[in-house]
Image 1 (tube, helix red, strand yellow):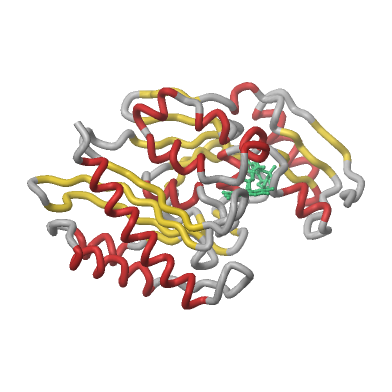
Image 2 (cartoon, helix red, strand yellow):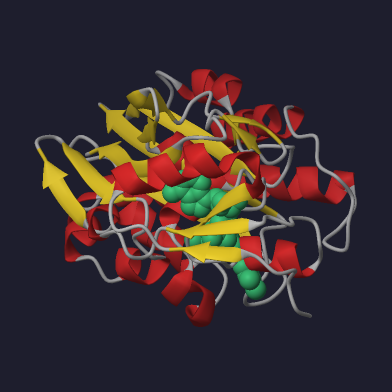
Length: 289
Ligand SMILES: Cc1cc2nc3c(=O)[nH]c(=O)nc-3n(C[C@H](O)[C@H](O)[C@H](O)COP(=O)(O)OP(=O)(O)OC[C@H]3O[C@@H](n4cnc5c(N)ncnc54)[C@H](O)[C@@H]3O)c2cc1C
């Protein structure tokens, strides 16, 4: 299928991209890797008259440690995340998560910024960002603002991004030494979105949970933070009883839509199972020297 005609723009700086987005108005769309936008254009779900390609702006790529955070340019691809030695050392959960996204072809072009900005509940980065307590840098005609991942995902394809703003950078605090993370994703086949998935970041102290963040993919209109499940674990050992309680609380906030991946009850049950597995795997990683 061929998308409708559009004018193509390729700014070389964030400032030029912001100016273009402002002057072209609602008929313009930002183009990142194109792996969500172009399928939507081919299906006529999106019909922008102008595409503003962010791919020629060097400042939007790259991964660097800045103090106690890792800063990732929005146009950094999943392939780049997978091959980053810095991320492997400091944020292995992000590397694990990127490896679950789509297939190698999509990962060569698809970007972390596009995955977050799209607001698709099936995308994997939103839950990873919630579990990692990330922040997003948004640039627009009114300047720059930094917002937390918590609260950024507002609804189906809806985020805190204003139509004239660009997500330029993702900032992730480096977890404390001894923390462990895991992303457990059930998918039917390579390249599929999650039937259900759970991201966990965990820190233990004296055999009990000192800090935990749990976030869920594709079981509601947005990625969800399972705060009641988190609270149920604080101060407790991770054992069969606390795992069951946390999984049940995670399931209780799911509101999945039945589709070819299963009915709502099945997806809710799989969310519980992914939560249990992610907590177990994260615990095992906290024990590694
Ligand atoms: C076969 C297939 C399987 C897939 N499986 C998965 C999967 O398992 N998990 C998963 O997470 N994703 C999956 N995806 C989606 C893929 O990861 C996309 O690449 C991602 O959703 C969007 O990133 P992009 O760079 O391609 O963005 P684009 O498609 O270019 O853009 C998506 C939307 O975000 C906006 N946008 C892009 N960048 C910015 C920015 N910096 N600031 C503001 N707005 C911006 C665009 O205007 C557009 O509305 C799959 C895609 C395909 C084709």
